[in-house]
Image 1 (cartoon, rainbow, N blue to C red):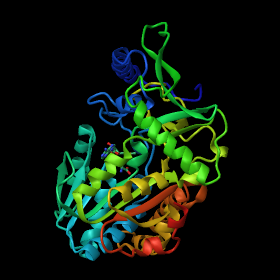
Image 2 (cartoon, rainbow, N blue to C red; image 1 turned 60 degrees about the vertical axis):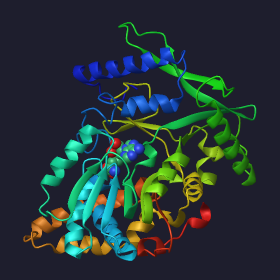
Image 3 (cartoon, protein in one colour; image 1 turned 120 degrees about the vertical axis):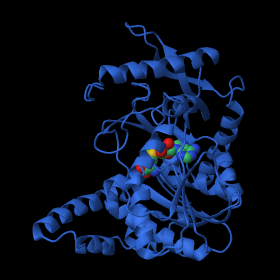
Length: 411
Ligand SMILES: C[S@@+](CC[C@H](N)C(=O)[O-])C[C@H]1O[C@@H](n2cnc3c(N)ncnc32)[C@H](O)[C@@H]1O
């Protein structure tokens, strides 16, 4: 990892505290933790984990950028689709999952006020106390008082409206597996020998899911289902193939579906249908770590200072959602969603803004927006790798953003 910038001493000291907490858990777990448990601690341990503690994370000063940070056109287009969905379900309630810095909410609130969206409440569910504070600061700078903002600790009961989340599923803890003589083995975490300075170090430890560790039964069920459904697709994973899946998706969608009494969920995440994600060509899996805009594949490097993500199996998402009583009402790429939702018109509107009085300001804004547009839409950037899925109950809602390229048959 010689290409990565070195963290400041204070950040390194924080990472050592995170490593010590993980090492304590490892000792309690008799030397082996699933990768999902490691990821949960590294990202979400209160006060310590990457998302729970105070590092910058998002944007230029952070480690990665998400679509709402890349361009205001993302919130512009997605919020217009949410406006249509709210009108279709006749509700004034929006819930955003994991709002990050609040960039999406800030842009969306502008759109709702411009469109006269029938929205009363903008609720936010955020697991990180640090991010909640940042969202409140960001939204305090938004010019409109309407709709009211509300932060919640858990899903509301009997929610009717739209639930939106960008890059939530790919940030959920994932299990890792490796194939070995036609079996799926658990790729977990153990303690490596200590560094010269005495801080804990971690390494991959592979073991069969033989029932002796917590989560083995769930792993076996999930692995058997994956293996069977890949076989039905004519896919046999080669030996030493490594892959991931997010743990607890059935429970996650069950609680979403219990909360959502009417309306839809709209989710955008890096991922693929099963037949493409678990393809023999992707034999190293999709686990990626981000540190100051450098992508790497070592989650044991500076725990607590890196974001860790894995791509989503959207077929598994559809199965979990359908088991919970929701139907897949739309599935497409980010490129098709934004193009179908009118991103060109949104760009033209942004360039017509009265604030861009001089031609110099217009040219500067145009080149900034075009740069953002490229990153959102190009197939080699986010255009093809990020997918939008809409899940709902009751009557289907037809959103123009899903009409351009309906990919539901690929799930
Ligand atoms: C990659 S960030 C995306 C942030 C933001 N949506 C954006 O696009 O900039 C992942 C977010 O998911 C949140 N998160 C993680 N687990 C969650 C859960 N179970 N429920 C809701 N949010 C969660 C994190 O705290 C974080 O805000």
